[in-house]
Amino acid sequence: MVFPRLKWISADLLASVCHMKRAVCPGSFDPVTLGHLDIIERASAQFDEVVIAVLVNRTKSSMFTVQERMEMITKTTSHLPNIRVDSWSGLLVEYCKSNDIQSIVKGLRAVTDFDYELQMAQVNLQASGVETMFMATAPAHSFLSSSLVKELAHYGGDVSSMVPKIVNEALKARVAESGN
Ligand code: PNS
Image (tube, rainbow, N blue to C red):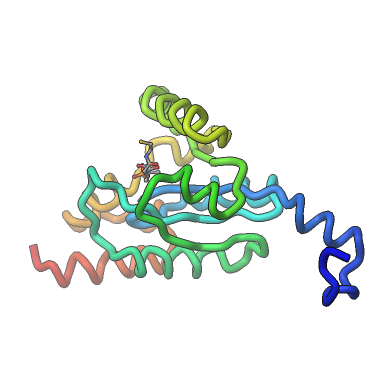
């Protein structure tokens, strides 16, 4: 027997665990927005497990630490049963390989996202065979980005319709701390 100590696991359950369809939603999430959450919710309905991976983007400086970003995502996705939140600072495809993840899920907001995302999807496919699935962002969120939210918040703009409540509060606190 392959798992002699696990006699109580039924063959069906074992088979379903072994063939779980797992996806990763990668991003900086600095901070998570309602646009991200829309994609995460819709991805969670399509896969057995979705890992939200907070990645370090070398080209961007961040407002929140990785830990803070993970906490905000954990709190705002607590209603979804099949979400796991993690962080990673290497290549995304390496993360996929070591976590048995077959698909990357990305939201496409507008045609301006397409060139870059297509290039990344092709590099990742060639490097590892991991597929990228694009989801069309809901029209209500097509203009939304973490950078825009931070810019608005920095100048005292109202971002309450763009981010979850706890993120809005964290943004106000961080702007007040920075004092400029
Ligand atoms: O939210 P972002 O900043 O647009 O997310 C971009 C991110 C972090 C998903 C992307 O930069 C990424 O995948 N970084 C990990 C390194 C990597 O695998 N790069 C792509 C192949 S060179």
